Length: 114
Length: 114
Image 1 (cartoon, rainbow over the protein chains, first blue to last red):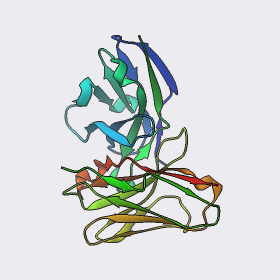
Image 2: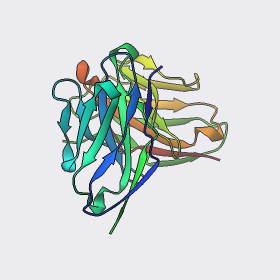
Image 3: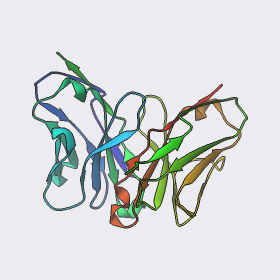
Image 4: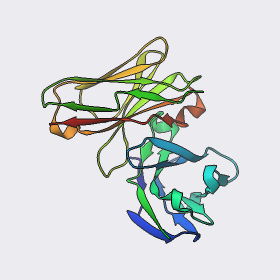
């Protein structure tokens, strides 16, 4: 069965520092990969997506992610974090053999200290 | 361009009652998916509607049912509510085809069952 693991429940970084959020998935074939952000009490906003091609993808708000097939990973990065980035981040995966649904990780809560 | 809208924002129901949640998709989207997000967890796929039919279903009991209307809007119905049904219910819309995986979420409906 498909699964998505976000190993870090909470991460705290200083404003201006770099950020990397980890995501590992378990799938048999080519996955479609996404990162979403959720502010408290809000819905999910799509940050970036990977379908095929260049394994380094750029998203909104200065975020990027790199697909590494050999490691079954799709880690999210940002060079310099802003206080407004504090939120919960979800990695999600889809695959043709599992239909059109997305499977989400449990999320990583990002705290930014000034 | 209006995004995905959901109503109501919040809802309080008593155990055993029935509830209906509503969703209007993003303009140009014809596929609607519903997810349940329990506190502290990632969203879990309930089902997806396309062309007014349920196309795929997650691991949820028959108490959860839905409907899609000719204008692509959708309803989620939950019968015989249990305390465990308390959650944020998220609606997501997408175009059909490969990019059906690129799902855009509404703000959610917070359901509390007492």
